[in-house]
Structure formats: C-alpha cells, structure tokens
Length: 305
Image (cartoon, rainbow, N blue to C red; front, side, top):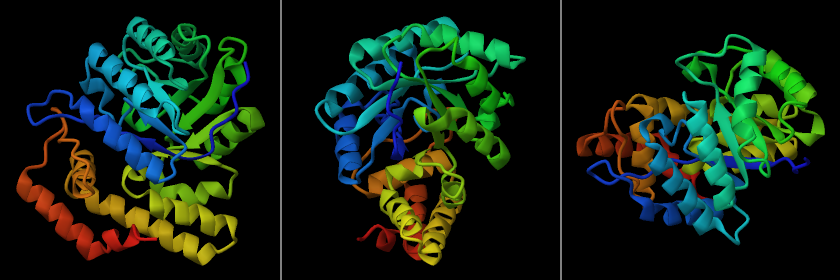
C-alpha cells in the first residue's frame, strides 16, 4: 500500500482539559484553526504531548473523533497515536481511528513489558496495524520515554512484509547515526519524521523533510523561518531561528515543560487547561512567571512575520 509521505511541520497536539481535569473537547476546533493559520501539514494527537498514558481509551476515541470532524475538508491531516501497554486496546483504537476517518495511525512500543528484540517489536506493531488496514502505520521511536532501545532502522528493514501499511517512523531519538540508517531504509516511499525540535536544523542537512514536535503548537513561525532559511542557503539565519527554539524549550522546561507549554497556548488565546497527574499543574502565579520569562526572551516578537 502506497501513501505519499507527509512533509513539513506536524504539531504534536496537547489534549485540552477543563479545570476539573475532564476533557475540554470543544477546544479542539480552536486548536485546528490555529494550526491551519500556522500552515502545519498535519497533527499528531494523543501522543506524548497529548498525555496519552493519562487518558482512558474512551477519551482517546473522543479526542480522535473530534479532530477528524473539525479538520474534515481542510489540508490538515490527522495522525492518531494508538499505542500503549495493551496491544489489544491499541488495536481497538486503531480500528476506531480508521472508522473515524483519520489519515494515519502511530504506536510507540509498550513500556512496561518491553519487546526484547526487533522481531517481537514487529509482531506487536503488526498486530496493531492490522486493525486499520486502510491507514498508513508509523512506528513511534521514543526510547527516552519507553526505555525500548531497539534499532528503528532495522525495524524499517524487516517490517515491510509483516506490516504492508508501514508508512515510516516518528523518530524522537537523538542518535543521528541511527537516523541516517532510518532514512536509507525508508527511501522516498516512507516518512522519517524528526521529533526533537531543538535539533531540527542539524537533521535537515541529513535529508529529513518532516518534523513532529510540541513547539510547533505555539512556535511554528520560528520553525517555518528556519526551514525557509535552510532552503535558501541562509545558514546564519537558520542558526538564529534554531537557537530561538532551543532557548524557548529551555525556558519552558524551567517551569515544567508540559504544563508550561499549555500555558503558552493560553497566552496565545487558546485555553487548553493544565496537565493531569502525575504531571504537575502550573498554578496562576506560574503562568505569570512563564509570560514574564517569554517576554524577556523576546518570544512574542519572534512570532511576528
């Protein structure tokens, strides 16, 4: 099955919550409108930024359904992350994503009972992908979160026959040698999407053409300028934009990155609430502190054309 690889910036979307921690499903339309204004090619939902492990299966279905509804008829593609520790449940979520009309599905490796080798990883992901035979499947390699440190390049090389819908890899792994092997294994037919925003410029030189990241929720203009500068051969400007993303991530991390990144969205007029336990919430004084630090950084000026 052939699917044209996605290109450009893909937002790893937050999941919106009310003050009491319940889903704020009505905010998804605002998120989608914001992403379309910022020229994003796709949205990656219920992943790490979407606090997938803190959502029930029913909540994940509701979020996926609403994203597909609000993006129908627009250029914004929806990739639903369905992975988790229970492969049966992941398969059910994959079936739902296909029925809802998503563009594609993705799954990280189980992180409690971890696959011990590539063959086991392929067997598990093949089981999930088979539940959505019409959608491209992307393996989400994020060893810092899952603890699974198996070769994504070997996965791409060996999984083709077992996963006919294999669309590529979301590569959130700092190993640039492994990234190059992934790009070689994927070829032009499959996507290798870079997942570490602070090093986007470095991987463009290696041939990466798509990136999935949390900062593209609120800092897409910076990343777009970085991409344009690279394409135009303006290495100096590209480095300036990359350093801005690095400083932005560092600033938010001082406040607790996940909650602080949601606070940025609120400052931009899109209230997504805070994070769910076990991630700590950011109290109102903390939101004010985030705003002061961003103003001192020059962040709001960086968003202007």
